[in-house]
Image 1 (cartoon, rainbow, N blue to C red):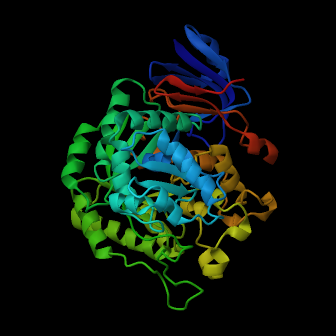
Image 2 (cartoon, rainbow, N blue to C red):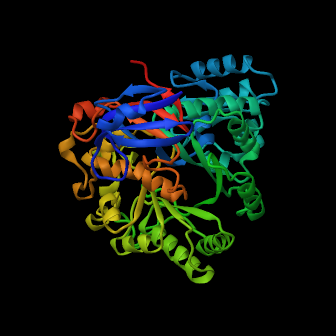
Image 3 (cartoon, rainbow, N blue to C red):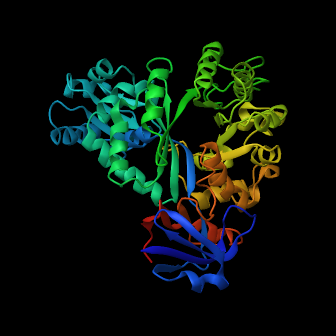
Length: 512
């Protein structure tokens, strides 16, 4: 059965404003886009959906997600209700009794406001590994057996340190498959039809699960794979194998994700003018820029796309310099190398992004992580001039840069209406919209949709088949239940995706 959507808010991505019209889908292709007065000629054999008052838009691209992190955040039992050591140990024992004795005991959601006695855990579990992570995964209540087996500690338990644990979890293909089913259902409910998925090293065999989803027709979004070197340097032989094996319009291998600096708020971001709290201090990390440069040059030479994860303006400038050298040494090509996160960028560097065809993948929902303005760290660490470099969305677009968005899921779950609040109002979630943060960098709803759709597909070399609603393109479409272009702030707060179409199939439909 063909699908036909009619609406007064059709956002094709080809114009700044929505139009009244319809879209017809046959198979996995958009076969007709037209004005509403022509609709009767195209309703034959089609299931017609009346979407008046709702925005019909190209499907959204989350250009920075981490499935393993999503799985990790939800693994094991929920420890959030434990306030005493006795309560926590009781939860651990209940979880352990439900598992085979050979399995480690895992939990999540540990409340960091309480102190839990580690000696009690060692006494209860001297041999079997136990790990209970707090919500931000900045701390893990764990015994020595877990430290010995998995090679991380309670205070150094970020994702890259936990690769041995991830490898073990992903080796259970049935478990990994069930987790990915939940993951893609979550994304479908948010209108996400394409992602850039990050996996450590060789993905620990998880790509077999993804291939099974594709072969069985069960995928609900397109996947652009990138490897993040963790255990060793970038493995170009694996990259060449994966690029040949994953080259369909549903799963593609792109290249490598490379970490540069750390969080600015923790002192790890590399800043040109340093931190205001400490004169002359610009970064606490020992960044191997020369090693990064060699890796990126070789990756570019072999035709891979690299995504460089940088926060501070000095780290961003280094990334731009390296990408510029790629062009000089290896020759110009449509590489679409990317800089991810990019919390700060110096004004002198913005035009260079467009000149070098660099995709800017920013976290437009990052304000959601701080709750309110007073929780944000900028005034404590940065000068007034430096603060003007933060989240420079409008300046980037005006410089001709390709701005697109990601969430760093599990850092946050993509929510396009919510991102419009942050991008247009620049207000932290608990603050009034009159308190916009550097409103000179605010965007329009149309610009935000373009970054989530058209620009995101350009970044993944898919602009010829995706990203806009045009005849002949693949049918990836999202529908938002509210007129996000002109609704009240209250209505925007309640807006949500009500339908997602992926590859011509409805993969999510909200009840009522």
